[in-house]
Image 1 (tube, rainbow, N blue to C red):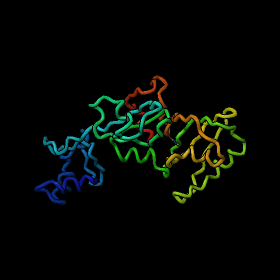
Image 2 (image 1 turned 90 degrees about the vertical axis):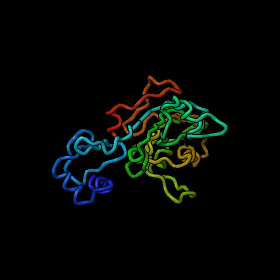
Image 3 (image 1 turned 180 degrees about the vertical axis):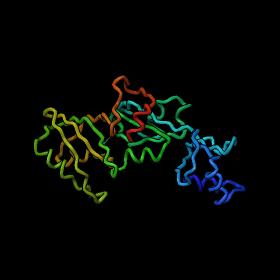
Image 4 (image 1 turned 45 degrees about the vertical axis):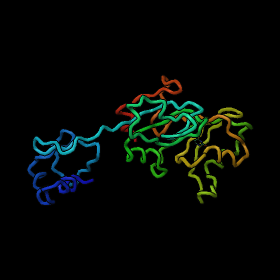
Amino acid sequence: MRLDRFLANLPSHNRQQARLMLAQRRVRVDGQVVSDPLTEVREFSRIELDDKLLQLGRPARYLMLHKPAGCVSATHDLQHRTVLDLLPAALRDDLHIAGRLDFNTTGLMILTNDGQWSRRLTQPATKLPKHYLVETEDEIGEHYVASFREGFYFAFEGLTTQPAQLDILGPRQARLAIVEGRYHQVKRMFGHFNNKVVRLHRESMGAIRLDPALVPGAFRELTVGEIATV
Ligand code: URA
């Protein structure tokens, strides 16, 4: 929301008074004096007027987790362990998953309470590549590479997948970079060749790489530098 709107929405203030308070340099956002009415503020912003606290700003949280196999990418599940069950209870509140993984897929999972940030990370429009290590039942042919680049038609969604980069690492192993996260996307892409994915591991999302120090099931906070890459 724009800062002038936030201020004008306060009881006993109108738009004109909001602009005046800003011009008088009485408003601070996250400790900095702000006079531009168009400044964007969020639920995470600390906003002060003179020495009065208008909004505390809830802490934004960003975690990376090494998702193990055999765990559901959901916040609740009646049958199976979820990725949230791997976190201490005090940390789980209001987190959502930025880019789900299938039950047996392993690797980088990011959890946050910042919806704008996670949309930038996952939306195809921002074109941040997600890298996967893939193992298949049958051999991966050289001709796959062009097909992955050209895209596959997904009839259910009525769309063609965005260009994907496939690097063949061995007869049944490849690294794949995709910018989308459609339902079972990688499995469906290989399914085009009737080649079953037997192991799938996400290595990175954009510039954020799974920390090799994290064993399956372990997590850590993202660094300021990692958060800023999105
Ligand atoms: N594509 C899949 O098919 N499964 C995943 O878990 C992630 C991407």
